[in-house]
Image (tube, rainbow, N blue to C red; front, side, top):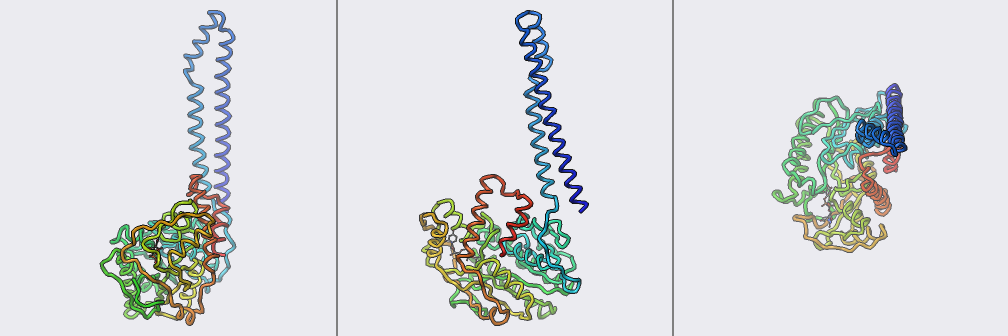
Length: 435
Ligand SMILES: O=c1ccn([C@@H]2O[C@H](COP(=O)(O)OP(=O)(O)O[C@H]3OC[C@@H](O)[C@H](O)[C@H]3O)[C@@H](O)[C@H]2O)c(=O)[nH]1
């Protein structure tokens, strides 16, 4: 509370300073104009003409310099106000009250990312203490800044390739780039994040006795020869291909999890996450959902990689969050597929987006991606049976929300305000996403 009052006072003080400054500048510019006009009136006599010269040389171009200086300083002060505004603790949504027995301290690695931040919202709303560790490679502060300052929330700028020593009850280990162009950008780093980073999280879980959920992926099935893919399928991955850094990285992460479970009795959960979409995907995410929506909104050609007959099954992010929380709470320790089994070819998906956005972008076929999985659809019998989970949000409903989100992002980008939210927007629009 004191912080709020303090910050507001500082803000008011700055507003006062600016107003004072503006008045001073206006006065100076007025005084200067007076001098000149006075001199000008007496300009007809030689004597007075000298007076004009004196006045001009005494204040050489002072008026315009003053104004420019003032404008510069006003801009600086305005920037300071914006920075301060960002720091003012805002109204937070009413989080549930939990007593100390039921309240958990939960670490979410990658908690400032697309999926992580939605999970953080849900855990915060449920009344838990949430610690986010993120290196901000693909995560963004704006995804969680509606919680900054909340007593149950902490944001740590940390790369999990380095150990983290904290006390927690649960760990959701989500940190890793997930979009193919992002994870291929620095393959060695992707491998380190998924191997060394996972060892660090399993080590932390072991030290503090925390339950840890590892975010694995449908990519462990590679370009599958079994369709749809059940968890019992061992996969078909090229170990030296361009996707291997992620696919094999996640496969090792799974192997490590069960090695720690067996050898060190760490309580592990493994979620194999299928294609997921929703608000807070990065504009430059590079995955098919964001690419197609942005292309359609901008009336640019929709780029299909290869023939477009490859298939994917897309789940809305809130369904995934439900699944992750259910898995963490369950006693089921083997890997569980979390995805929506509704399958579409990429070609079909392109026309769905076109139809939804209501524009008529052309389709442009470009070169196929190396090792691109040709068919992907989760078998979710295990999740249904052991977690009582299945996706609820229909594809079109989820896509509608995502289109709205990207419309706003484009608007923000054109207004050069992408990184600046007003506090009211931060709290409410971002939380609407989960409803
Ligand atoms: O602009 C595009 C982007 C993608 N695509 C195609 O759309 C399909 C889906 O591609 P995406 O890049 O969205 O994602 P992928 O399914 O290849 O990988 C994803 O799989 C599941 C998750 O674990 C990861 O988020 C991610 O690796 C691919 O066949 C891809 O070639 C296009 O045709 N055009």
